[in-house]
Length: 422
Ligand SMILES: [Zn+2]
Image (cartoon, rainbow, N blue to C red; front, side, top):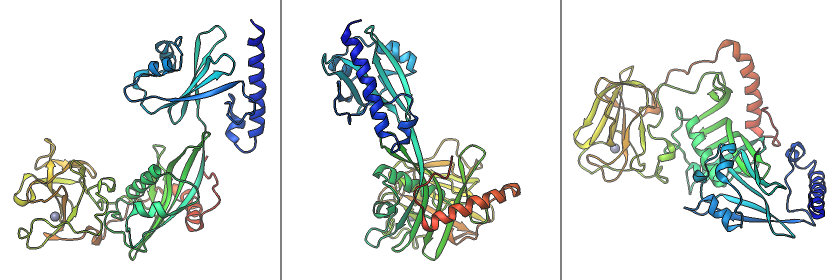
């Protein structure tokens, strides 16, 4: 081994150790890390880092070739890493570490998924070794307080202008809007109910990676003040390792009917204030709710029941009608298509997809016409006094109450981001 070959690894080791000490205390995951990562904060560096992005239609081999790396047998390494190099997505950034003196690439690093870092290291023998290093994420709890504004009365705008305890990126804000609408799917129709002055508060987990990326975890609790109605929901661990949501008394928020048969994520934004009129003169009185959603958006059965109509029905176009308990029927009109299995007499479960949004029949654009009828009369599904949700098991109530009290406090006034789940 040459003298230089001995000096460089030693210098690298010293600098890495210095870097680890400098970061200690500020960044706990660095302290925990058994494989410290060299960071460009080092003053004198025996290497430089070059970043390169995988372009569309380009293979990893092409990128490596561009970086002057030829001896790296990806196929052999892929087996070790359980990774198919042909399925790596464009846009992925590769960091190549080059020796400052020889300019030879010694390390290649990239992140195939949020939880993993892949590193190829050139050995002293000149071949390459692959390692997979878990990316550390720390979890804290944040509170977001949202108020619906008069000029943009929708949840997305409220999230953009809302106050959160910490930074939450645009994609994550959209995901949060969808999570909030899923949790409240039985109580609030976020596409139609929100008005200026309404308030939504959420307590949720936020994950921060050692590289500073932010993503949202579970929503732990919410409170909504919508019109004259107020709700609170509290997440509590279910048997499958997820969270189920309960009200203050420990009754499930899940009810017999979804408030909207189209997920909020598919609703065309800006619809909340505009009424969507069918071709005038056909219906003397409009007896349903129109949801403007992209053509092809899934339509779900609002509740479990038996199909009574599945097919063409005049101005409704392709229509599904479901009979539920207590004299309730629901109708879904203008569908683009209805699944073949869905015929009169078929049983459908709540939230089962019964077709896709279209504009069949008398419709001027893609939308779902939804009717909720009780004993033959069109009614607002919100006006129905629904049966209370299933209660938590008695044996769990005391634990739920402790959990709920902590979350209620966080909902009310927030706290410095503190881990409350381990
Ligand atoms: Zn309609």
